[in-house]
Image (spheres, rainbow over the protein chains, first blue to last red):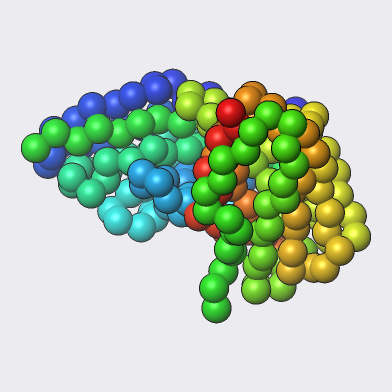
Length: 115
Length: 115
């Protein structure tokens, strides 16, 4: 079974300060993990994904995430927030077993960026 | 290359009316998905399809039906709409290559209101 928990429903930062969006997962097998971003009234866009290669994954727009198996975490970070980063962020897990590629989404974290 | 498109973008229904949402993808993807997005709930899987002519239930299938008569199209039907089905509906598609590591591509969404 697989599940994902996004630990914060809202994160508020000032422009230019670091961003940390937290995600913990549960998976019976070696998982694939994704972060998607959704800007207001838009569809979802892939930020980055972990697929059992390097544990530190770099994505678009300066975001990166580190897979930590011992902590079952896949937190998303960015050194310096930009106003355009304000959006909803979703952590997604897929359990690499049984040939069933059904993702499980977290409930989302709303990132608010203040000028 | 349009990616994933959804028709219509907006719709208002009265309780008991029926409608069909159309999802089309031009990437020759095997997998297609229908999700609903409600505030604070993330994305919840309604139905999915692993290939032409096949469909399966997701997490919240009640009140919905789907069909995948052509590989590029995935239809979501509401036979008798209820106010609880007011939501934003997203379609997604994914290639079957390399299993779960592939990215899902999302449509722009359909905003449905049931009065």
